[in-house]
Length: 452
Image (cartoon, rainbow, N blue to C red; front, side):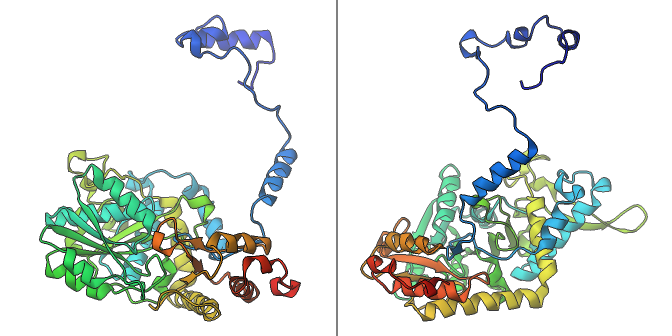
């Protein structure tokens, strides 16, 4: 403990209040072998301005001022200043789960607005609020489909985010849920519909696809839905880049939509915390995990909000709960709510168009590996050098490059996934294009104006 009483009388008063005669008695219940006999190896206390200087120095060691073309599920987008202004208010920042509706109308209102906006984005009838992140939303959607259909098998596209697939397998292992993957077309980067059709059977309850998929390709959702529905399965559509919803048509063929809202003003922040969602059609509402806020009227007939259908929750009637997830990520989801409010329908569309234009500008100077239509990220094949070597060279130009794909797709070991957003500058994109067009050993000799 750092605090010490100022006088012996204070020390004695504290011990008396605890009912012991010495500080050592406080730890008498611990075995002697685990009791520390020396002070903790902690540095002495420092002043506030020294702490600020310390963290400024640590921040300078990070990639401050670096351009980034890394996407793959976590995207570099502008965060409106208003987002932090709202979420930093004490009413939101320190609030807990809104069990008591009579004192939580503000929080419940923001969650209801969040759900409404997600329904508008996805074209679904109802949305929850919310999941831990996109990766946990995927297995929850798969189990939701299994409950609804009575069929326990899931088919998932290999073009779904590989870490999302890993989380699904982790969940499925002790759920008794068989999970099988189907492939993608090597030339187009889209799902292999023939492979999907071949692997479908009458025990399959969920077909899971992602659009835009992990390669950035806008995938064949409608065709996948036809195959799934023909055999009595539900179609689950995943997204990781929420900004794409500003320009792509909502997946009307989907029975369940699950995804990640990190792009909506949620900082990359070393990979989390984020906010995932599940949205679905009315007929599946009682199978949804996570919290759901509904609209009602109070005793005076005024509009009011409350948690509803709570049999889905772990904290009430847990034997009937559909999931062990009992969070709503309310503060993180509020960031996305403020973002959607600031941008609005037209603003989000313009933002999506910017992302589309910049990615296609960059791709126009390179040669995308796949022929499928893409949104704001795409795969390129490295010529002569490995993706890691090119990324090392880009770092010398204060640019974070793309994701080498060999870790997840051995057949794409010579390729990387590049992403461009509204934050990408033309000069940086030109530099990336020139670097990727040169052998790594020549990159250091690029003229300075290339990296201006």
